[in-house]
Image (tube, rainbow, N blue to C red; front, side):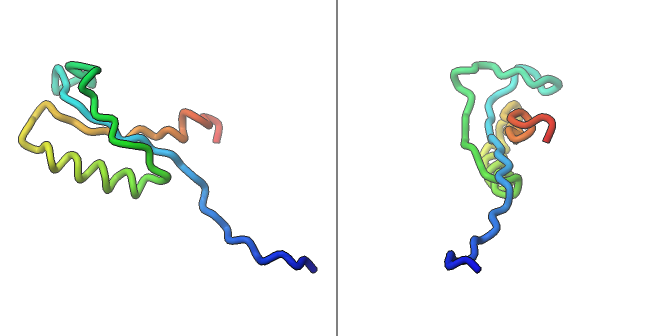
Length: 81
């Protein structure tokens, strides 16, 4: 038997990136100005990324060309996983 305290099981980190910006055309995902893309942040799971995405989308609802996206970074970092 080990004298070490039991370790807590941590959930797997699934990184998500939230970005947004004005689109050239509403039928495409091409930003008008890459210098103005809002890189909101990287989050450890979809739920926290979604909460931030929703807040940012609601803040910019008056601008029809402004869109925010959730990028599943974990799929890019481990495409076979």
